[in-house]
Length: 81
Figure 1 (cartoon, rainbow, N blue to C red):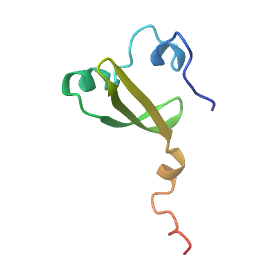
Figure 2: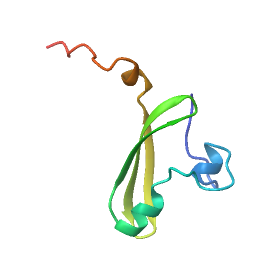
Figure 3: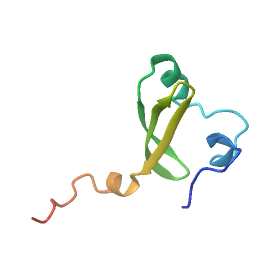
């Protein structure tokens, strides 16, 4: 799945084709607390480890990692040394 920011669109309109913010959005909590937010959620058929990180007073960075593969194998092999 190819996902990314779309200039001039909000994340909820560009990614999820929504007219309103997602119910799981942590931006309101970030604005109130000023602290980074993290949430694991299921969306678009995948499990995501999502982050909201404050950058400036009125700006935050939002990104997510698809961790579906790790969720299917809860006990991965140890790294080779």
